[in-house]
Each structure stands twice: as structure tokens, then as C-alpha cells.
Image 1: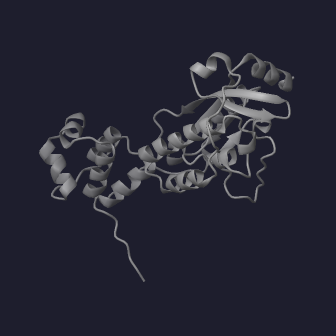
Image 2: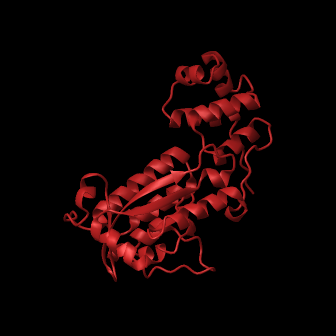
Image 3: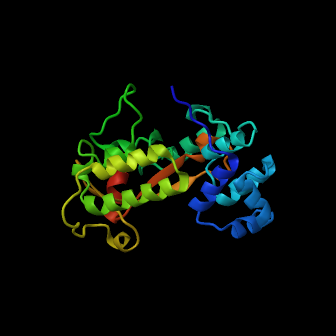
Length: 263
């Protein structure tokens, strides 16, 4: 049998400060405490209060999921609950309102690892022949997009889109330190990489503004751009990790096709 010991609270706080590439002086000034006090907390010579932990976590943008272990390490009860998506009440209603209101364009809600939480009807066109049954493991949108058994064969700018997705996952991993993201990144990087570069395709002005997703469908080629929306001031772990991704036509032909399908 083996036992594991949780790191002291000072070590956890120092790791997040170093992950954010911040100096003790910088963080201490921003959190309104002395550099000496912060140094004592990080080395275990002083115990932080609940309020100090909150201030430091706010300043270091520590995800809510990672804050609870810091409170526990300091001898306090966890502060942030983690409710199922279906139990988020008004926040769940807000997500559904955004998804429904965005039709006829595709939209979906995902967690921090891009596992699907909810989607609108237009996502049926977007996902095409990718299926997900109720007994399947969590449906991962990025695996479905880049995986050889998913949509990769229909992504016309696969090299460009793959590079963009991998950058997003690396940034998310750097921000959250989520172990599931490390596993996801390793799997995405293991998928066969397309050779060469993508030839320019339709998308009009969007090609000069964003990286569009160019997708082959039974109705013709789609060119899409997307935006990401998150909740402001969340206090629940699940809510803190939800992102709503809304797709928009990147050219006139895609816009016309979406309107036609909705009709």
C-alpha cells in the first residue's frame, strides 16, 4: 500500500504563482500584502487566512476546481461546490437560451476538456455522421473533429484547423493545469497529421480575420467561424468550466445554406 501526502498550502500557492510567471513582489502588491508575508506563506512559516487565499487565487486566476485543494491544505472546508450541469438552474436555462436563440447556426456547450454538455438542433448538420449514444463515454468535440474515425476526413483545411486546435488546448492546459487536458492533448497529437499545407478556400474576408473551419457536408462546403462565451463571476466549479461555442457563417454561401436548412 502507498499513501500520498497533499502538498502544503504554501507550495500550492507558489506553484500557481510560478505557473502565471509572476514575481512575489508583483503578486504581493496586487493582493495588498507585504512581500515578506507572501514569502512566509509560501515557505510555510505563516498560515494564510481564508480571505488571503481568496485574494491570492483571484489575483493568480486559479480555476475554482483547483482552489478547493488550496483551502483544504490550509485547514479550511472547500468553498466551491460542483453541481451536475442539469442542476445549474438559471445558469442552465441561460445556456439553453443561447443555444436555441443561435439557430439556424450551430452552437454547443462544453466543459473545460471540450466534452459536450448540450447542443442545438443545427449541430446535427455540423456533426454530420458523428454519433453519440447515451451509453458512450463523454462525447469529446475535439476528438470528433480531428479523430480519424470522426470528422477529420471532412475538414477541408485540416492542417490549419489542427494547428489551431492544438494551440487552444495547450493554452487551456497552461491556464488550468487540468490533467484530463494533458491526456487529451497527447491523444490529439497522436492522430495522423495531414501532409503539406491547406490551399486557400472559400470564406471571403473571414480568411483574413480568423481561421475558418471549412467543412464538407452533404449539402456542400461550409465555412464557419466561432466565438466563445463564458460565465462572469462563477462560484460553482461546473459553471466555471462551461464555455458556449457559437458558430457563424464565414461567407454568404454558408449563410444562405443555413437559412435554407432552417426553413
